[in-house]
Image (cartoon, rainbow, N blue to C red; front, side, top):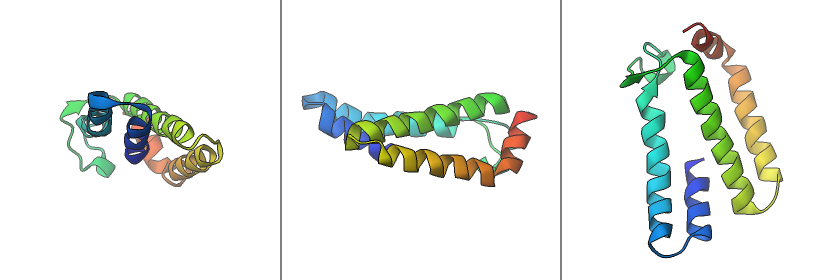
Length: 106
């Protein structure tokens, strides 16, 4: 997802905006991903710089994966990488249903 966002910024932007997008886009995403956590989430190391509910965390994760899928679509100009990415994301959540259930109770 981060690479796709950076590649799209590189190919779609010009001048200083290109560098802001290539560096700032992924950096902003990483910051949000690491900051907003559910306290005690074992998959996140248990720490939560900014505490959010489990449902909010799932919305954040879903939004990020949607951004990644959109970036793949824009970056490649085709739908197949998007489909593969979405299948992998859904597969990940199916394999970690215990975590999803845990998040929904927090």
